[in-house]
Image 1 (cartoon, rainbow, N blue to C red):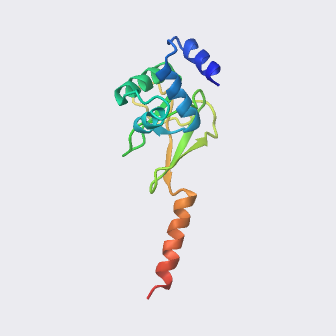
Image 2: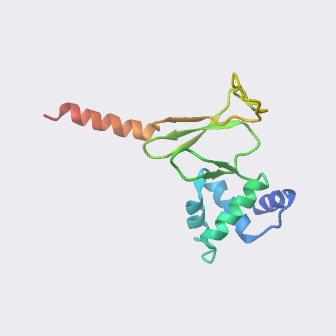
Length: 150
């Protein structure tokens, strides 16, 4: 896998570094991770890497188009390797789980506003908020207990 990641870093015009490779490897395993999670996971194999260097690496990889940064309301920015397609996200409002949702239209922008205010719209990010299956089950169990309690 590292060879393909190294090739993608070079193809993006960046120099291959241990930090860049480690960040991409983490995000291959754990999509939708925030900076602190990426840092924590990188430190398992590279304990010398600082949080600040992870911020710099994620910014460089995002700028080079190797990562996508999403910014859900009320949460830290999340990074993912799934790029180059037009997909959206569903986020659990209880636990924060993030799920990719394929766009039914496919190409960008999948939504066109009635009045773009003079903007040439290039993309639209859609975020669906709700409860993931696990939190739905937990809520149902809580509701069931409350219904039988005096």
